[in-house]
Amino acid sequence: MGPVKVLLVYIAATKGASPALQRKVAQKAILTATAVGILLLVAGAIFMRVLHFSQGALTVAGGLILLLLALNIVLSPAQKEEQGAEPDEAALMSMAVYPLGIPLLLNPIGIVALTVFSAEAQSVADMAVILGMLLVVAAIDFGVFLVSHKLDRYLTYERILVLEKLLGILLAALAVQLILNGLAAVGVLTLTGGH
Image (cartoon, rainbow, N blue to C red; front, top):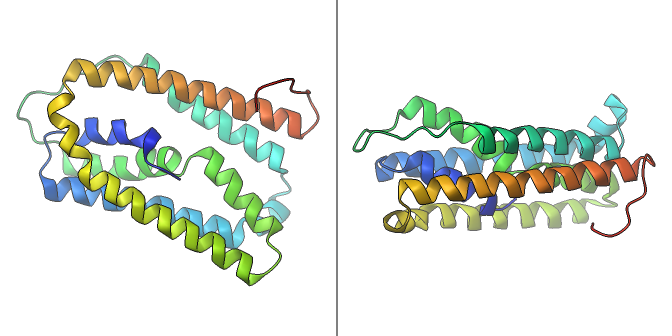
């Protein structure tokens, strides 16, 4: 759970918004990702047992969802925002949940990891350590979001567009790797090289 994959999308979406609105969007994205992360850590093992899915199946599903999001980023037509127009608060708050909070901030790799940690934790102390790490990462992410708009002067519309498309391609590669890892985990294929 980290801001690298989400930061560019966040900056582009909230460019031109007031600092208060930028902060609200960041808070909602962080709270969404953290709450879902805690839920997966606490109940992930139960979800796996009740719904009868394997770690490999979860990995493939996460990869497919991330691939669809990445394709949407890469293939969607560019829409230039009107200069000086205040972004729509309701749309930004909705975007803070999806796609900023889930699946960009708490991405499919994090979802798989937290669910597996939940299933494999041996004690309450194990869970407490992982929960502490999750909360520290969330605090760091929030700090990064708060200072991210200092990059605004360097990010013209064209630079954001190019970086956004590049990010989409990298996310697609990550998604394909997740799918391959999941297929290998269930024994459909054997990976030679890569992760």
